[in-house]
Amino acid sequence: MLNLSVLLEDSARTHPDRAALVLGPLRLTYGEVDAAANQVANLLVRRGIRPGDKVALSCPNLPRFPIVYYGALKAGAVVVPLNILLKSREVAYHLRDSGAKAYFCFQDTPELAIGEVGWKAFGEVETCENFFLITADPSASSPIEGAQTLDAELTGMSPVFDSVATEATDTAVILYTSGTTGQPKGAELSHANTMMNVVACNRMFESVPAADSHLLCLPLFHTFGATVQMHAGFSMAATLHLVPRFDAKQVVQLMNTEEITFFAGVPTMWWGLLGALGGDVDVERIARNLRIGVSGGAALPVEILGQVKEKLGIQVLEGYGLSETSPVVTFSDRSREPRPGSIGVPIWGVEVKLIGPDWSEVTETGEIGELAVKGHNVMKGYYHRPEATAAAIKDGWFRTGDLARRDEEGFYYIVDRSKDMIIRGGFNVYPREIEEVLLTHPEISLAAVVGVPHESHGEEVKAFVIPKPGAEVSSEALIAWGKQRMAAYKYPRIVEIVDALPMTATGKILKRELA
Image 1: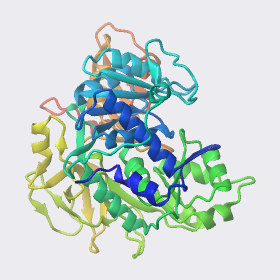
Image 2: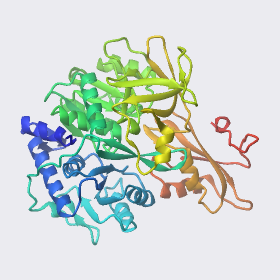
Image 3: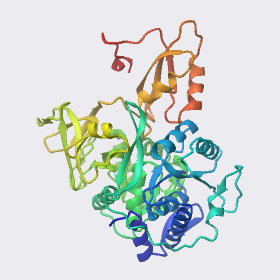
Image 4: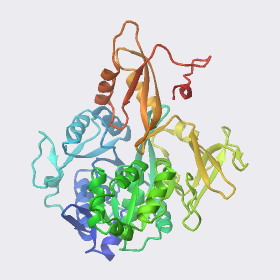
């Protein structure tokens, strides 16, 4: 028997008075967070949620995110975290595809329009029976007619709950990841998948119970932030300082006033952090407190690695992972000299090899092959997609779609992506999905989407568009149109109107020529 909720429960039992979540003046102890999660579990059971049912969650880095997440786990449900930037069409797809029975959605902020988007999507999915509106102000009434606030629903709920005894192989979370075949697919991760990745993380970071304070800028709906910081942090009774929206100056000020020991981010966050280390910032104090720095999502430029070492005195640890691998696959070896540009070596309990298109192993040092992974971190499969699962997993090995090489000392380096994935600011963007949306425009005949270099985001999304004969459409109009229909990290910021696209003799678009 194994339920991920034990990560919270054990820390609440051993360190009930230690701060678990901090957001501005709000500080919640482990005892308080566990009690609140128990209330959520009781609410779900009262609403008819049974073990194995899916519970979707759209929420920024606020205390209610881990509280709802662990509350759903306690009830034996499967958590389906959703990107808060999704539009209603996209949210409805995820609710429908996952078969979610309940949906927790945060109310709008000036920067985000989640509540209205979520309520609209919920109304389009008949199979989703429960909607709970998360508000920043617990005493606030619901601004959406027909929707009840979570705080109102939790009134009178018992803070005591006996967590459901799930099996280690039961699904704990479904993480949606896009693909070159179009619509996003749900990667099913078991309780054991995530638990073992947490154990591996704590071994790598040499974590000590009740010692670390994490600065949590990575979105918790993403596997990087969820596993490496939320789950791993809770398992060690760490204090999590929540950052709902990354702002480099505000983050540095927080590091200047709090004793932050652990910072993880994508390269653009590290880039922003360095740029904000000026003025009245006590850099020496920040450096003195900071114990671990982690980067992922894309390769960290060598120049930034050097600047962090110089200014903050730490070697940023880099790794590689995917939603399908819980996520961590490889990581920097702290006992060995750093290899700039490398994704490191396989983590504890995980095997990695390079393969060809026919699954045959590539063994020569320096030779390029597709990265394949085997171990406790590999997902159960894609939810309700046996064919896609069979194509991705063979004899326990998961093929990542990323091309890599290995040096003579066993360090791996990503050299290309066999899937046409774009990494924009740490978020994965898949051209096929964007192209399919663009092709719904009444004046577009053909579209091709590629990633182009960008100074701060790493890559930017660019679309090449062929209009229909006689159509008159501008780049600016298409950008605005896409912004209304796709998440903020997805829609093309650059659109080029063209008469033709470079193609092979068989009609395949030569995207490398476009890029």
